[in-house]
Length: 364
Picture (cartoon, helix red, strand yellow):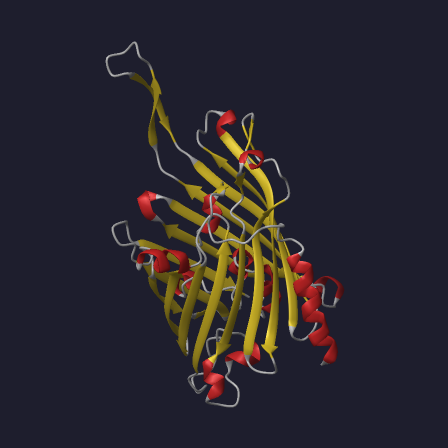
């Protein structure tokens, strides 16, 4: 056990090397680009208030903490999600994870792929023209969009320590017909997951997301980061546990996966599990936040509740953001002997549009 406790500080130190000097999060005057990377699409994670850094999930874990990919038990895993965001903006994502063990009959880790696409809708373009009575001329319709395409890898270092990384190419276009009106960059995520902290069933995780490879992100002929615009870097730490373990020896989920498999026999007893999770995030360009979430599993049905707390805003004004509470539902039917997850999340957004997320995943 001694080597395990020595390995964790080393992994955390390595992760900390990728956090820029002077980075503290919590807002400030820093301008950020590629804000679409800060919005989650996975319905299960959203229903738990995005308190997902230390939660074991499916292939969508690559969007939250790539280290959690190595915690999965069923492969391959394929997931698709849609997020009907505010202002008629639509997010669509897909991910897949594959166990590399069959290649060499030994543990080689997990390989994953990710894709995120954002449709901002259709707009009518105009251009200033003082010679017209209106003061402008129509330039036609245009459809802004953004996408991120990535590849990730995760591996179990010890029985209780897992690490992972995710490299992605991100691009944003404001006009499909004008190449000069686009912005692109390379970015990466890193994560660490530590199971059974202090010999308890408490799990601990850290993740650094949206770190840039380059100091100069170009938009046409303009370099963004040299003038103060940067990627939406986010440093997140989280803990989670199965509360059911406090009332019984070991829950069924701790033996195989966080989310119980659908029973193959009708005489299998029903399972109860209550998972709780909490995150503290330090995003660049935004206020620091606390995320808390819970998930109650009864056999193949999951009920979820989450809350996001804007620390700085609440202290200064006494009011939280519009999107505080999130609720959700999950179903895990067995179809043809395969594990299927159908997840839904609902987020009321106050004066803005309500947000609906839907995810579908298959594990074989």
